[in-house]
Image (cartoon, rainbow, N blue to C red; front, side, top):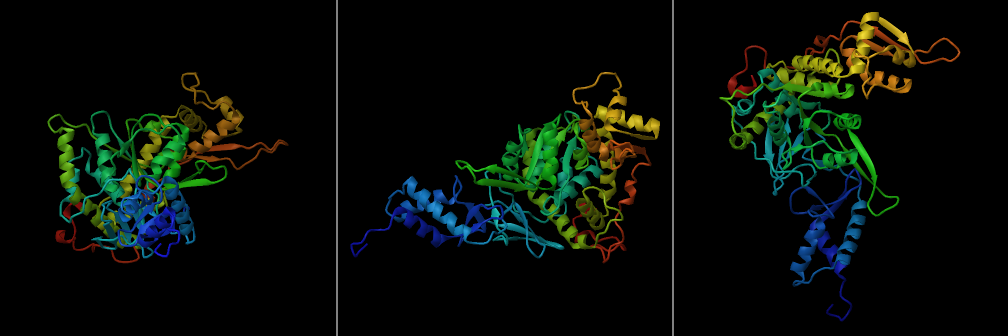
Length: 509
């Protein structure tokens, strides 16, 4: 200093520079972030390649005539800034999609200027600064600015080889994917080779949450999956042929909300938490690979074989998609805005699995006149039947109950009585009564879809009080009952006369 005192250390200067330019917060999962005072509403990590540490190192060199802060000074400064962040109450930090307390949906465009789309009942707009705090990851890519055109969804449908029912369900799923607080079924593109499953799923993900790697290979373990899921709002697993039990359970939890606790690096007692609920898609040839719980959480759309005269190169399709993306986004946002207007009034006569998503489909149908909810319920029943056919133990169990009408006994008796069709037990056949009981519980949703109920609440009357399995053949579930009841208020469009095409994109009719 000018009075001859000792000049501030590099770490002190770094902290001062940081406090002039950033505020510091901690997220609800206990991660510290910095937010620029004059800049986008983005939560920047303190460390890492995209974090504040590197920015401060450059700022320090620019401010102090090329003087370079040492690694120890930067580390000391980060420790101080983390302490400053922890002085504040936790705040929500969103990834790609968030919601305001008033119920508006906010979609981060992922651009450097921090612009976002805000969707409310009946309208949407692009704003310069997001009203909620977002974080970014290296797995994210920018979205184009959406535009309002009358043919956005129709242009997207023209690129896909699926019928109208399948496309409308997929369009409703994509619009619902921006609703952050509900579970979403896994969009499953099914079809033989040459139907364009992978490209269809990739385009759907790149509309919702663009990424340089929209399609991912099957993860090797739960930790690898958690790291992928933490960095993206929407993910696609490509070419799934077999699904191990751990992955089936993990995908189910990712749909409804999951979290992983792990030890922090270089510590003995500190932990890090990865918590998430994600929007998922996958491609497959055979729905028989789906386990019972997972089969209840999919939206299956089947793609048709592409005629040789209509097949386009990937380069040509990429160019057409890039050109249409702003209009397609506008069409999806129009659909979402209409859904938000009528959703509070939508009631279902009965609540199927994935009930929140079913309500969204009912709202879509009310806005557009489509039939996505009945089609989804019918397709879900077919998926359950296909999944059961792919399980040899489940098939044998269903055949036993069909012959008997009602079967009662212990898990040990069931294992002894059940035999595979060819007499050879496959590797995944239960090997003891405990595994048999667990397998029956997992199959219960699929069995219920074909009219077989499972009751394991009773005990035998002998002194051993052994748990009994009671399997009963009943009428299959009637999915037609799950239809929207009369809304409490007027619909987005009046029923009579038909809606004016100028008031909403005609491709939604």
